[in-house]
Length: 80
Image (cartoon, rainbow, N blue to C red):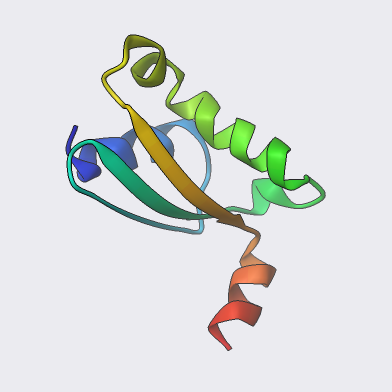
C-alpha cells in the first residue's frame, strides 16, 4: 500500500488536525493528531485509528502500522 492511500483512509474515517505517515510499502509509521483523542487513553486512541483501517488490516493488505496519537494540545507542547 502507498502511504497516501493509508492517509486518505484515516482522514476519511476520523477528524485529524495533523497527520504524517511514512513507510516502505509494508511497514508504516504515523503521527495522528486529533481532538477526538481528548480524554482517551493510549489504547483507546490506537483502537480509534485502527477502526479507520480495519478492512485493510483484516484483509492483510496493510501489514504493519505503528503510530503516535496526540491531542492538538499535546502536539503543541511537543513542538515547543
